[in-house]
Structures are given as C-alpha cells and as structure tokens.
Image (cartoon, rainbow over all chains, first blue to last red; front, top):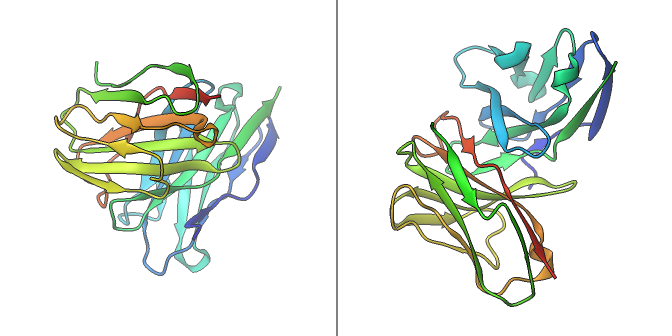
Length: 112
Length: 115
C-alpha cells in the first residue's frame, strides 16, 4: 500500500515565486516524515524532518514544511525560488518501524 | 570526511552473471539500507540492516541478497541479474535504527544496466 503520495510529478515555478510541493501520507498513527532533495547525478540529502516536536519545521536552504494531521499532509514550501532549487524532491515516511517509504518524487523546474 | 561510498558507480552486465555492489560508511552507523530508484516509482527499499548480522527485507527484496559482516560494509548481491533489475541503486546509513528520526545519509548511487 502506498504510504506517501506526492501530487504532481513535475512542478515549474518562476524564479522568485513561491514553491509548493505536496505530500500526503496514509497512516492512522502520525509518522515521522522527511523531505529529501536530489540534485542531478547525486544522492539524496535531507532537507527537513518532522519529529512531532513542532508542526512547522524549518529546513536548509530556506525550505519549510507544515505537518497537518487533519489533512494528513506535509507540504514543502519556500517563499522565493532560486535557480539552484531545481532538483527532484522526495517525501518519505517512517511509521515507527524499520522501513522507509518514499514518494514517487516531484521534479522542480525554476524558470528564469 | 563523513560519507557513504558505493562501487562501482556504473555497471553494465548480462543476464545471469553474478555481481556485487559494495557500500561502505565511515560514520559508525548502525542502520544501513539499500534502495532502488526507478522513474515514476520513486525509491523503494530493498533490504535494510539494523546492525551487524541483522538484516531484513524491505518492499522489493526479490532477486537480491545482502550481508552485514562488518558494521561499515553492506554489500548488495545479485546472484542472477535480470533486465528488470536495471535501475539506479542507493545505499544509505543512519546512526541508529529506523524508527527514530535519524537522518539517512545516501551514497552517490550505482547505475546498473542488465542486458
């Protein structure tokens, strides 16, 4: 069963515009949630993670995400896109087990 | 430098020829994992290891084997590769076992083509 759903496999924004990448999880138990970024020809690196300490999580490079239990969502946002943000973004969940489940990814294009 | 290394980075092989992809981490991490990345499917977990001599299946273990004889190494073995195992493979490690909020550190990836 799919544990994480990322809506939109491709997102394009203009430089300076808001970035919004969507992630919904399916779990009756609030999980641990993560956003990873993959730059071309590289491995993944962590942007931010939700650990149940605070619903608004700030990450690196100006990204943040808000955990909304009522909507089972963990959308990633950045107020102003930079060209360097062009990459693939993955939402991932760990449901208090030893396994991780990743979404199918969203490719972000930033238009100059 | 703290890192996860994988070798080889690129490999083209033929159906049925056994191969091993090595993974090594220098951070004394307990948890290690293998993923495959396919277009439209994201990353799927193949196997993971909680510690030395402790391994378990992920979502897509068929056709793969792993071993964890040393803490730093976690090789992925394809005994008889098939074309449907053509993929981009990532090794990852984290300090403690999953179930915590530990960050996973990923290797650079191994692009495998099975003809």
